[in-house]
Image 1 (cartoon, rainbow, N blue to C red):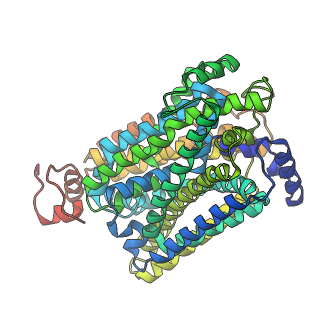
Image 2: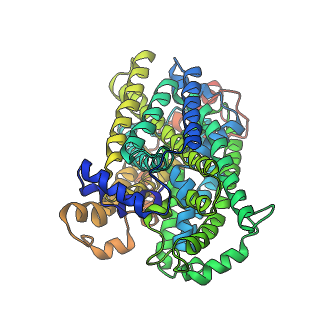
Image 3: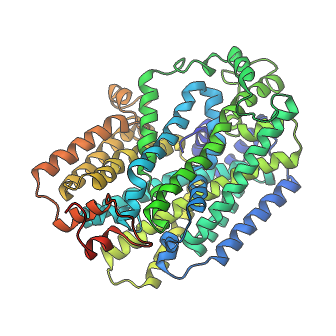
Length: 576
């Protein structure tokens, strides 16, 4: 998720530094930040070490030997367990730490992230989760390729999946490095290499089955750590008793008296920027491949729907507390660090401090080191879970959609497993290398991954499931249009200025209405129109494809492990 966690790298000019200078820069940051980094903390380190050993052990115990288990866990996951995996998969280190930071520094405007990310799941629940499961494939590109009977469509979808996973994972690597600095007292680079190495190891070993088991464990760890820190802070400061989520009203009022944007949503940005951001996050959620693949890991559409409900519940438990952390963290920073000088404006929190606000809040509340370390360990668990989900979606796109479906149709299971694991290793190494010295605009790039997913994938998924007359040509036109709009917006206001040294966008007026981080507000309606117009003027899809789409909406419940293809080949759909 695009949050201030990744933008921490923007505050530090690491992209222009050599490795030796990078060490010095990070050391300076460590000294200047209020977060107690740079010292080895025994109990938190033992906690994280035990946690990493547990993840590797679970990965080994559930190691896989079949592609079904590698890509979709043998479709054996239950609704509650899958809901916990959805929660852990979704709540990255950026979400765990960054949402509170956004609310603290941007106030109500930062709530666009909470609104966008949670609303997207309601759309998934109502319109897409059960239908995706009924279609019954392995990956998001697999759905695109079969629904639109086109290898070109499958290839474009696989490429987009790899690009999203790669960009998204870099932000997680940065979060791991930051937390490793606090817990182990090691350098940022050593932290990235250590924690990314563990992630690559257990994901390559266990595939989707072991990764899902680990995600359930990781969710328990992160929600316990987050909640214990919240309650302990409230009790130690006398701010809450039983329900801190509902008892922080007076602290919000006090924070607003210090920083006006805390309760003024548009003090620093306009209405259009808020709406464009929230909309892009909503449709981006519905288009992220590593989220959608979770619906393929269950045995039928009912379990898929209940998985979404449980996932929303588990996500809500954490997001509910982020505003509380924001208010309490801001007040503690104002009191303990700036001595009444504020917390969000000039002279307030630096990017590094804001990114670590959840951990920083527990430290400023003078809680025991082991408890602060537990909260930091929760952030590590969140980063590992999201990175694992991204690696699985990337490896399945490479091995299943590109290697097997486009290059070698008779590939054996062993060959697919080798390609999948090689992809996990390859993309893991690349993410680690980029994470060591991330591009200056990494935060924007992660935000842009949502805009790309929403603009390119959401219209194709939605119309593919709900309009049987959507044609191959329409889908190709829509995806090419979406890529043009989303990547064009990025080139205009980010990539070209970055590499040419210009301070402004190539076309400033275009950047105002079509920002790279929020291009979906304009892009999605245009892509919908392109798909519909081209589908109307081209030949209808094959009869068998229409039957599959109707089966996705059949009132007849599916049998266990059944797909729309099985149902369509075994009888006549109800409305055919």
